[in-house]
Length: 264
Ligand SMILES: NC(=O)C1=CN([C@@H]2O[C@H](COP(=O)(O)OP(=O)(O)OC[C@H]3O[C@@H](n4cnc5c(N)ncnc54)[C@H](OP(=O)(O)O)[C@@H]3O)[C@@H](O)[C@H]2O)C=CC1
Ligand SMILES: C[C@H](CCC(=O)O)[C@H]1CC[C@H]2[C@@H]3C(=O)C[C@@H]4C[C@H](O)CC[C@]4(C)[C@H]3CC[C@]12C
Image (cartoon, rainbow, N blue to C red; front, side):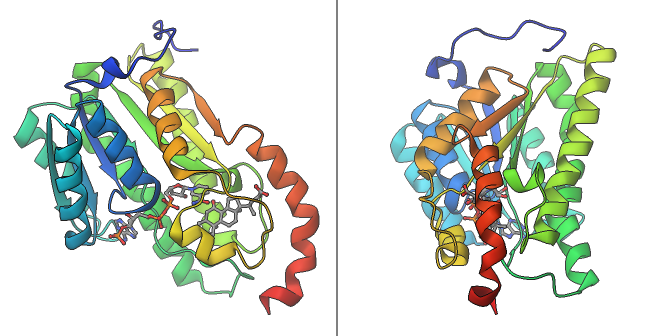
């Protein structure tokens, strides 16, 4: 629980006029988060690498009713880019209400290949950039008593074979943001931190990466995105989506070990 009371029930009105950064917004779950927020009439700053995709998402957000929508394109592998995104929000809005950290770098689903450089690069893209954006955005979030939403995975709660590097980055998010949340409570900083623990979701990249080896049916990205916004607006500590996702991974782990043939 937070030191400060959180709203009891979710109402889409809560997001009207709110200033929200969404990372990894050019496709997948992040794109769907942007569309839901647009319908809720929020101000949006979207980021990813692919400018052409971001332009289309921004256009769609404006059609859907966003109070405003703009993008900044760049790579979170670039250690200077997180501050560039937050500065754009500061220059445009003069403040920030919600930071939705969602992007990930490319992750394969196979045996760890021993490439330490690849682990280092993924830690930069999937973890350190989240820390850097939080550091840059914190003064504005303290001012607005806003929210940080961190999109993670069941693979950040349970070690999963064939996703070692990715899982490490998600465990790092759990450690850092759960610790930071304790400090905010001790220090009476009224900024909420919501960790979203997701199971298999039907985004193009995830389905392409694992549908040939995982039999379970992925959950819908549209509903997933709405649950992410809802849990952030309600200032919840954690979202588990789909419900029982961690248990489902434990169950699937029994079968993952039979995958070595399929993955070789
Ligand atoms: N789909 C699933 O089954 C699950 C997903 N999750 C989590 O949900 C979140 C979204 O996943 P999902 O929608 O499937 O991912 P996608 O691969 O569909 O989207 C990833 C997003 O990140 C952007 N991105 C990729 N590389 C970089 C980079 N170097 N710098 C900045 N942005 C980058 C991509 O855009 P661009 O290429 O234009 O840069 C894209 O917008 C992630 O945090 C993931 O860990 C958790 C559990 C399961
Ligand atoms: C195998 C898990 C599904 C368990 C179940 O039956 O529900 C998957 C749940 C989360 C997946 C990983 C994830 O978090 C997304 C990554 C996205 C990449 O694009 C593909 C690989 C992932 C590491 C993916 C691997 C399978 C899961 C652990």
